Amino acid sequence: MSQENVAAAPAGSRKGFKRVLKGLDMTLFTVCAILVIDQLAASASIGVQSIFWWIFTLIFFFIPYGLITAELGSTYPDQGGIYAWVQRAFGGRWGGRTAWLWWINVALWQPSVYLIFAGIFSQLFMPDLGLWPQIAIAIGLTWVTVYVNVITLDVGKWVPNIGAIFKAVIMGVIGFGGFFYAFNHGVANPITLETLSPSWGVSLAFLPVIVYNFMGFELMSGASEEMTDPAKDVPKAIVVSGLLIAAFYLLGTVGILIALPLEEVSLIEGIIDTLYQLLGTEGLGGAAVMLLGIMALYTFLANMVTWTMGANRSAAEAAHAGDLNPAFAKLHPAHKTPANAAIITGVVTTVVIVVYGFMAADAEDLFWTLFAFSSVVFLLCYLFMFAAFLRLRKIDADRPRPYRVPGGTVGAWVLTLLCLSFIVQAIVFFIYVPGEFDMTYAGSIVGGVIVTVLVGEWLISRSRAGAART
Image (cartoon, rainbow, N blue to C red; front, side):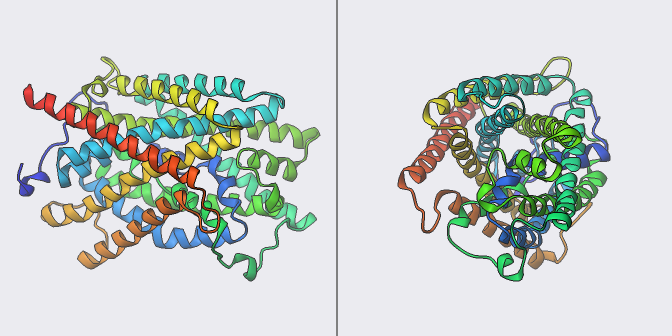
């Protein structure tokens, strides 16, 4: 296939999808995808300077990233989203690589989310629950997620829609509750110009979490052919959801830092500890924490349903086009949902949970190792996506663009380079932290990523060879 024709190549779309995603659905879907409660404590653990990093990342990464995704999503409303964009720009092999990394990241990340679910469940209801019972809970949730992925989208979409509302309520309670707490009791961590000033060192271990927490604008485009009007609704959903997400992240972070001393911010239990501090442990306050805790638990399920919906659709499209193993391609005969991809995700997630259960000393070790490993895999996809944006601007310049990144060619390059620089630093600091470099930890992350990439190359080569024979 010549480079001139790459942009015009179809992404392997199929007929039969029901257009059930409206503008409000897409906004709530994106809020649910990006507003990640289970990572809020990790970003707050940087300290008060995390407020500076939230604002800095918002201005120099989140906004440029949103603008780029709005152009891609409205101009190329192909089922498969990020896979389809990279495939158009660079051809099927690069599209297959993107779909593989995108999909496997979710299967690797899902265990950490459901283990933090189990940790919070234990904190609320069964304080003495051990690691292996928590692992059993995580496996059960994995297969609930598979089920929601298989049922029809006009039903399944309500899981993330409700999750987005719950997330907003929890963030609002933490944020506004923090200000009320400060008025009555003072602040646990003084917020001054000095403490807001950024510093370098061990805090860089958590700085990539802020970048990670802002990712997900492109996720809804995995279901582009299930949207009623993507050209109109994608840019609007990105603007509205982006404003809500930024506000709630800042509110939640400030609330945690007001309520809890920095040394008491736990990666797993930080959210519930904050709620107890703000609302109390007895009477109505304790009951409110219990209710909000249950809502938080639901949001973890909703978050993984959202991400698996996007990732499984990208994998199914890539497989249908011959760019990924055909096992991913089969849809549910009635619902037209990516049933096979969802089941394979469930199998991989289950295996990873069990394997890491033998490797981790406790739930927090397990959480961070899984999170860092899957994050590096995940972020590699964005190197391809941002490069595809520039490539499509060049080779498909005459295509009508319902929304266009401002500033012409110069603006496109500046915003892309800003985004790429944030992605690269996040990858580096997930692996290497100045002053606390752990060769064993770094080696396990890098080695895992290399193995993941090689497995993907093998699958893609076999898939393309098989497609060429048929």
